[in-house]
Length: 219
Image (cartoon, rainbow, N blue to C red; front, side):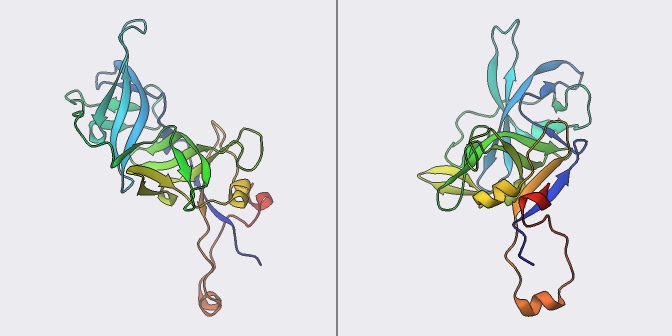
């Protein structure tokens, strides 16, 4: 049998929540704004959240960075899924931006520099850990607008031209084999399949379950 193209992981909607535009509340339940971005470091660790703090009738809205540790996430919450610590202070503006990356709207590339897609959201679990990114892969394998989810663990972060860049080695065929991301449905997050094991090792290795080697098997 041909080796699989991709590996898929199912993320239930009760286990992770989208970040972008999620309401942010104080511990007393008062909504103070919405999340608009996540900033990660070169190790892929979330460092800050950017919150659009609301003014009155839209007047006075401002974007403020807070330390990631100042937030609590409740993916199953029917109200605001993100709670900001009542004593949280904004992150000092003097931090170096070169070793940190705002995720939303960032281009994700392959190792050779070819574009894979654009980050349009991040899925966060109840332990405040990113689980997947939602990628707009419009024009990558077809002219139709299409989004997929990629496992956070499949991303790498490298410095290039003095800026941090996210990488994931997904070929056109692997993107095409990935089920589309659909709001309200369980998330099927993709990772590139690991290289096949040597023949001798493969004959004695235990069987593993993979996602399938083509688009039909991936659905």
